[in-house]
Image (cartoon, rainbow, N blue to C red):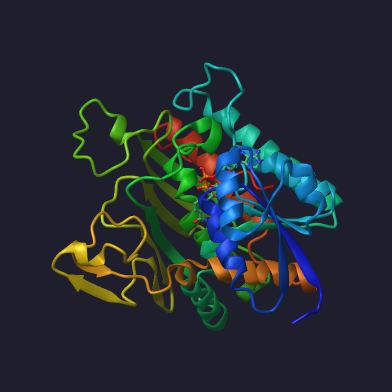
Length: 393
Ligand SMILES: NC(=O)c1ccc[n+]([C@@H]2O[C@H](COP(=O)([O-])OP(=O)(O)OC[C@H]3O[C@@H](n4cnc5c(N)ncnc54)[C@H](O)[C@@H]3O)[C@@H](O)[C@H]2O)c1
């Protein structure tokens, strides 16, 4: 424990801001003072800050000024300007996923379904380069809040890979549920895409990370992505979709299903699924098949706890697991969901880095590989699955 107190500022007052705040309450090796929060939605900001006895900032500049670390918990379209502004002031930034992307051209007729994907890829990579350029000039660091990298199951598998010196032959993984709560999600101009970037980024980045760990453990250098083939679909917007009311259907111009096949430099591969079309709660997992072991990381649901009730009225006040439609019958209750998802572990790692200068595993380089892979995936989907090379920055 250091006596130094690190000041944290939260940009945003929605879902991610709430779990960042909660994770900050569980830090154990660094002392933190939350300076306050800023978001342009004043009503939500008031609610968020009053409930937590935090200062509500009226602008981002003063939040940055009074903080050492800025949490970027805003829609993806707002990540880049906030990150660059904070880095200019030599502050660290903890940026939510996805790092950045392509959000259109500000015109009223921009349409996420139809814009040329080649342009999306080029612009998303330019955005990454600007952010990494700002990081290079700053004393602050980009800490990429990809919680899967810090989920205990992923940390444990990384340890197994280091100890066994295994070669990963193939992986498959998924993040799916019945639809995001955020209204910004659904409009490409805010989210930079649909299921592939919004959900697929999690298992995809874990797969990229495992190949990095493997390569570093054996040869001292990461194995990185080389090419992708992908398909996307907008099922809930199909004219023939039969809505039974269980899935969100209000997407404007994004896909609600994505499948992406990633080929790594060494010829091995990973298959990632992401969708808004899965009932029964969040379905987050990754399976690693290697030449000396096989691991299934069940992030959610897992069988740490299972509970049965004949009538969900008994569970009226009980939180069971994220996004489940019903609590009746058997539930895979997560006894500490944020622990299994890695939220507190990522904050611990980031604040140790801010306090003691430790390197972070989920850094701008991993985030850049994820964005390069995803936007190459969008280009491949436009070409109905043809292979597209991944541009490594
Ligand atoms: N890691 C995870 O498990 C996870 C889960 C959900 C969301 N996220 C990510 O968190 C980020 C936020 O998503 P959310 O679900 O909290 O969205 P949300 O819509 O619930 O909240 C977004 C907040 O950002 C604020 N905002 C918008 N523009 C801003 C700006 N320029 N400056 C400051 N605040 C601004 C809004 O007022 C709102 O308070 C996204 O990048 C999303 O992908 C991550």
